[in-house]
Image (tube, rainbow, N blue to C red; front, side, top):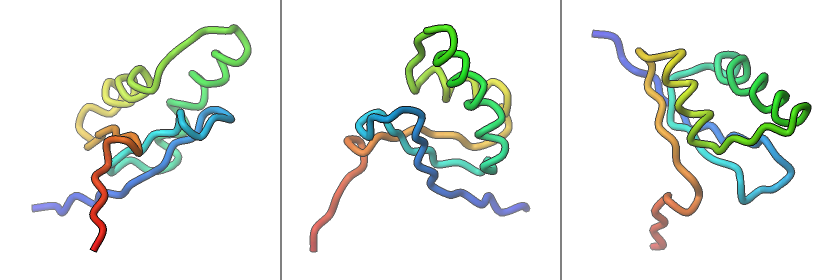
Length: 81
């Protein structure tokens, strides 16, 4: 049985930190960039709008066998001890 190697990746696609999101995934940086990069560039060049959920949906469609979950900093629980 193969062990799934998950990691948390913070994705930044704009100058606004509040629009960043986190992925819990087994995808590599290259896999993520190869899909999200062209979408972000198209938005910048052609004024096409997307939201982070769209980016994640595209990743899930391209890599259906991989683990991909989206989180925002607001959805992460914080425990202070």
